[in-house]
Image 1: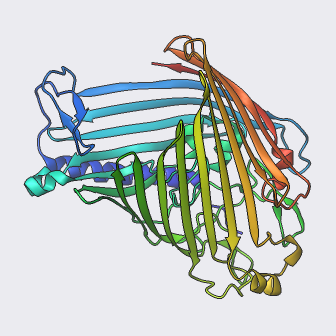
Image 2: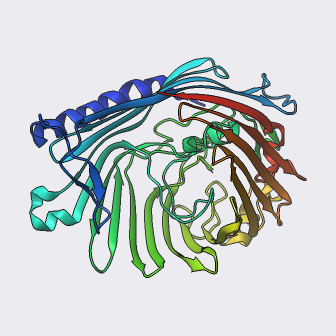
Length: 449
């Protein structure tokens, strides 16, 4: 099994992004020599400017130390460390004549893998397309390396098929790192009848999936936990484009949205005839609804996962199609205490064909899986202290995942955080149960500049 050299990716990505930025700046014209105006949002939700600010650029960032340790021994992983980061983030914004350039990059030493890494989270040019005339004022574009997200779920992603970093989330890095960047072009349009977002990612960007570098996982064909430390590279990793679309509209206190995605499963849960992991084709069609209800907010979301390479569900090496539902509600329970509850279901289509053709039928998931998630968030000491507990529990798999955390930031210059990731389950092959030995304690200190 080939191993992808991540250092090559990180070396080439800045060059690609820099080429895009240089081209855009050259076409766009001169940078203002005048002070750049302050920003505000107009009726379209677009960025507009006034004429009083004295700065055309901003530079900021933070220095962070983070550490995590396993709560129980994992005999397959050779270390108790789950997190050991020394990280420097640089954020730079530069205002051009009628647009903005943004850059966010992390340079950090990963003490678990003993590698120094550079992660460009954002390198984008963003502008309203006013050069197209009055009609162009209804459009804006954002091009480059960026973090994208949509949908209504809280840590549950049905129609959000943009990449996620589950290794960071399970290890205890800041929750912002759950969303992974991609090199994409996003065009938004604003009309009276509806609003539209279209995203093109020229080359498929997968999740940062659990691969055995930090945590072991259950491999059905081996009928045991493994820690292969693998990465899927071309040609098993697709290099074709991804397309995503969102059509949405607000009516009164309610928001309606429709979604479409064409690309690939975000994790390598397909297998080639030679038993190599790969990504199979996927189309997703969905919708969502959000509105006020009582003293809180209600949301509902649906997604149909069309597994293009397995239309009849009888190919054992390709995931079956699925229908996914989400219902959620959140509100303030008492002063400074917020709570939410979500019901999430996944129904496997052609489940009988899956079982009949599976190489490991006893390890296949049930036809209908039901998950509940609950969140409690408390803010005290004038919001200097934030306590957070989020729990997944599956009534069908009888497994779950609990994440508890605390953040203390009495001043704007620094923040101290810590918490627990706890996985539990009755069977070692269920979704959460396979990570029971990954349960960990983490602590972070971040200094802002």
